[in-house]
Image 1 (tube, rainbow, N blue to C red):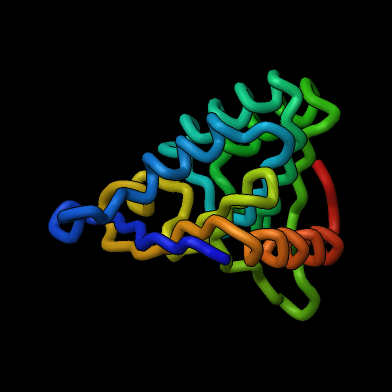
Image 2 (image 1 turned 90 degrees about the horizontal axis):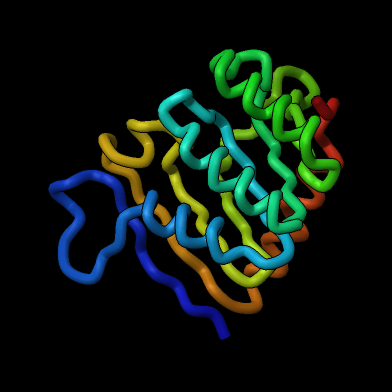
Length: 162
């Protein structure tokens, strides 16, 4: 069985039981025990706090795989932080997705321990986490294992590791 919860970004739609995307992202990363998988189109320099949380998880021994679309197009501070993380933690890998024929990865996915996941429209940026009107789902249950396997396949399609 799966539990699904709607997540949103945008102050005017965050009402009732609906939770914000960023707090749930932070919660999942902080509570990861064994593994974190992230697929991202964009990490902006305003989302470095998320990379800091990932660093904290890596320090606890959590295995981390981050797949980013066209790594060269990311902000220089993000690239520098990712390089630092890769150099400091052998169990943290960053993959550069450059698909064939100008394909891109546009997904925004966070999976922890193959048990909990967020899939949504929000980039890992200030606008995606706070400003824009974004919608996603938090999933807990059997389906997350299948999602993690899809992320494994995306990892295999990635062309280089920094």
